[in-house]
Each structure stands twice: as C-alpha cells, then as structure tokens.
Image (tube, rainbow, N blue to C red; front, side, top):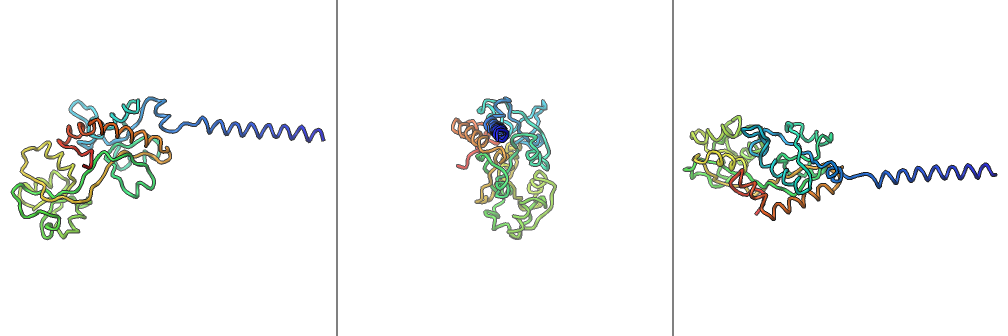
Length: 266
C-alpha cells in the first residue's frame, strides 16, 4: 500500500512537471510582431526590377514607391526595414517558407489570396483605362472598343477585357511597345492600369496620349502577411499606414513617383 502511495505521488509530480513545462512554453512563445521588434528588423520581399515600385536607381540603391512605404512602416514599428529581392513567380512561395516577414510588391487583393493570407490596409488604388492619341475622339467608353484595334500583351488580364468588349487585339511584348503603336496610329488604343499610365506620363511628359475612358472597378494592392503569424503584425502595420496617411507621408511618396495620390481611394 505504501509503495502504491509513493508511486502515485511520484506520478502526480511527473504529470505536474509536464503540465508546467507545457504552460511555460505557451506563455513564453512570441508572436511574429514581438519577434520582429526584438530583432529590430522587419524583412520585406520585393522584386527590385519593377519600376517605379521597386527598382535600383543610378547608384544601384533599391528605391521605389513600395520600398519607401515599407521603410516608413518599419520606422513606425520602431525597427529597420530589410529587403530580400526575389522574382515574382516565387515571391509568395518564399513567404510560405518564412524567408521573410512581409511582401511589399504591389500584391493585388483577391478573394483567393484572402483565404490563405492576411492583407494590410491597401496603399495603392487603381483602375483600368483606355489610352489613345490626344486627338482621338472616337473612344469615350469601354463599349466604344468594339471593332477597334488595341495593342495588348496577349497573356494579360487587359487582353481579356478587350476581348470582352469585342475589340481586335494587336499583340505586343509590353506596355511601351503598345504605346508606340498608339502614337504611330497603327492601333486605336491600348488598355492598361491607371498607375502604369501615370508612370509613363511622369517620364514622357510630352507624349501625345490621353485617357479616353476609365473603368468603374477599383483594384487594390497591399502588404501580404502570413496568416500563421496571427493578427498582431497585421494590426501594427495597419496602424502605421493609418498614421502615415493622416500625416500626409503616403501622399508625399505617391506624388514623388506618380505626380498624384494613388495611396487613397478618394
């Protein structure tokens, strides 16, 4: 009887030790935001070849709209921003593999991505536009694209938009080639993103092109965060973006790269 009592006491002690050990692990585990603040660094993934959002300047310094916003957010979090440059095709897989904390690379908010990831508050708002020569008065809506020739990359979403309005696609290798065909009068127009048009006009200020029609659907881009990291990091980034918006920093960065404010949907 005495031996059974001793064994029972010992077993109880072992179980208590195991439970205390588990409790200790739970209470001492850190969320991703705490880990970032303890390290003093938040790691962002970006392409580094996607002007004007993320690219290298003449001094080979990584700059761009996304880069500067990421740096401003990091500063608000009280840490330094570090960047890992990677190709778009593997950028989300790298987030899954925990190679970095956040993606800062114009990631569009979609319902499919929201099922698996967390998004910050959007910091880019855009929409589709029809771009024509400045003297073209034949197009004033997307419906007017029917029967018109449009210069598009055939694999883009914009080509699908053109097809949905019965436009005739003239295949190109990219936006710059599409614009050249518009300027040469070889096509009637090209459809692309408003932000892409702004970037082009910011560089080619005298180019004789204009926006002849705009879509009503707004696309939004934001920072992408792992769901497994919890909501703390998302909340902290959103608070930082809110402060940066209110003080005018986001607008200032946007004006620097686009000549207008794409950081707000107003």
